[in-house]
Length: 579
Image (cartoon, rainbow, N blue to C red):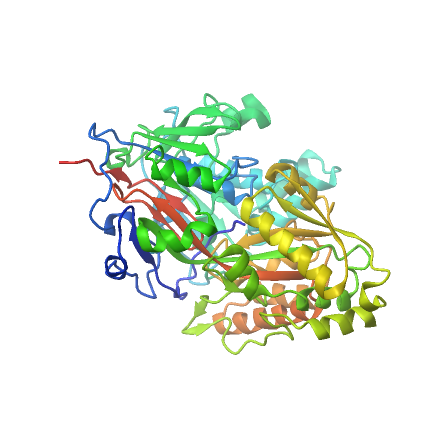
């Protein structure tokens, strides 16, 4: 989950888009739908086929869109929850953004320059930028927001996206976290921080090292500006009310109903408001995807973020509203490397070998995903070379190897599963995730004779448990934050805020750090490949599949886009009304 966020300009995205249709489609009509090229793989709604449902005759520019999980937070400076993406990417805008072809384009910054050494970025903001409450938005707001993320008191889940890259940010973070710094020391750390606002329209960011994908990192919500006034007046509760949720994107929050949904309306103070056509977007929390699909097919809602796997075969044939494309994300089960017997690599490899990933995808999930035997999926191409090219299978198999798994478990001291403790297998409330968890429970019992106790909770509670290390085996995943393998590497770095397994390997850490600071793209790629190979020798997690994202949108809704990073944009969306 999640992820998602920067574009390395040399990256070429692999994969194609399948657009099929809302009612009465045939195999021939499905085959005739446009397919994106390998270098432009984001579905865009205005290429859909002729209407198969009648749009509202009123011409009202409003859509209702179903989300299947309620986000546990919508503070862009704090959350790393991908369930918040549809809200954040429409209520906020950063310095740069992506277009429908996944190119970095200007947003709040109308232009920028990069120094010859690649370390200093100077951004020129548009004149007249405003917050949704009509007050001016300046470079000082960006300075405040970046410093806020780099302050440990903020408890940003993505603090490392600032501290790993911005000059002096780690020192600033460490000093404030020490609790012993005086005002003079803090002032000095702020002066050494590589972010400054020389005037209201200029923001300067200096990096520790050359980072070819830094513009993509800037597109993530963590770098979106937040209003200092509303945060200081309302504290953490600023995101709890439409009145205090001040933003700067094409839409603003007009209503919050916790447990039900959140409504956005057009932000008249957005710099490009003249080109925003939707007047209202209601994000409705419909957690059960089958219920959401029924609402979609009856015309109650206009779109939904995902699709029940059991309905995919039918929808591929019948519906022009179905869109499927490869996504830069991996779904896996985390193993708590700090508890027995999961602290033994032999046990961890046995758990990896005892499952049939192909059966999980084809028979249990009935999805379009691809079996995963590693952390980073295909499609990350640098200078014409895919990250996964020539990669080992790391001794694993997509269909499993039960005999070897049993041998490894016996070698670890648990012949035929004897003496193996009952472990907790946790998942968050979701129909498909539940099916996978139950299938894994059965596979481990049948193939290794070990018992797993299934536990579940709503996402917000579940995620807190995982972050606290209160799990044995936990369903999780990661959507790339930017189009580069480095997005995945911090997940297993020692001390990373995203490393929930307790895994620690100094050699892995060193390779990742070398790759992070290596200016040559091919050399960096080789270092990350070495790091992944080390990781997979230790098997600290169980990769399940590389993702694809199916979703539904009525064909009369045009102009929206959703990127391989799972970014969902409605800025240029509109309802095409009947003539």
